[in-house]
Image (cartoon, rainbow, N blue to C red; front, side, top):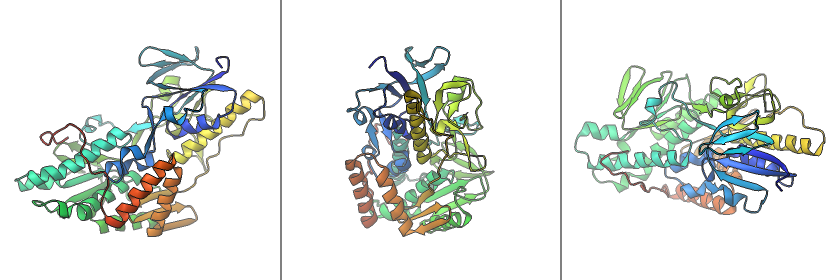
Length: 422
């Protein structure tokens, strides 16, 4: 097998796994490199952060996924650079891996717009570690408020601020508000969790800007019905352990969550090619890195245009389409068959939930909102989960929460104590 064409895939997200799946049966050997040993279903990560589901229900060991694919080697490692001339990738431990074809699908991380010092007090949501950190801080805030004698401090502990009103921010704010106002009141004796404030801050003129204006307006009304304070048109100017400054107004808030922006991995700098404002590598129409016939960049790491010049959005369906496309290109090259034309992104619609009983769906001409949209959203996400056990577990968690209002994963498992509050 060592003489087979060697495809190195950096990143085990949606794009990377779709590529590996698309190469099944091809005359290749594959090395899949990722910094973590698991694939993560990121669209439901906010539900881990807000205690709806457990971590094991949206993450799967990569080695286990490919246990029946002997041509696939999985490495738990971090790539630090690419030598395109030597056709090697460098690993953090000093090792190098040769490749014949390289596919970079390293995703994106949080972007704080030049204020990286905000990250410790306003964590973003991209990994399981992020989700459990946010979950711990939210739950500890209620526990600390139950102990607190100072009314001002107690109010700050019961004020939760979500920065950024895209789908993740809206989903987080809605679930935190529901938890405070519906799930927790009967469990605390010294505080009334219904007095908690949940603030959603958006610098732009409206929330969920990627959706049509009527759906955006509906989502805002639903959030406000749940008790969320929605503030648009004013950016956050400071984040500290004591609170957040919105424009020039300081709000005492001990729990901040960042959902305002992303920054791509440094793939463009590894390859010495142009990048867009979000750091994504600007690639050719066939997803090749310009000037590198044997290197492809896909997913959140890549910037490629569609529909009149708009960049393909950094969402799971786009990454999967790109991974499937590059797999076809590689297979065509190896077999000498006709290669597919330029990559064409097919937008399958946008979905977002507001709490546990409402959602909005935008499929272009077809739009939907309300409870039925929530069920369609749930069915779509369960369908894309990996493994029968995960689908059943998530479906049961949602059904139980829907009926009872009780969250199934309200555990504080980290070692940190109430004293540090982190």
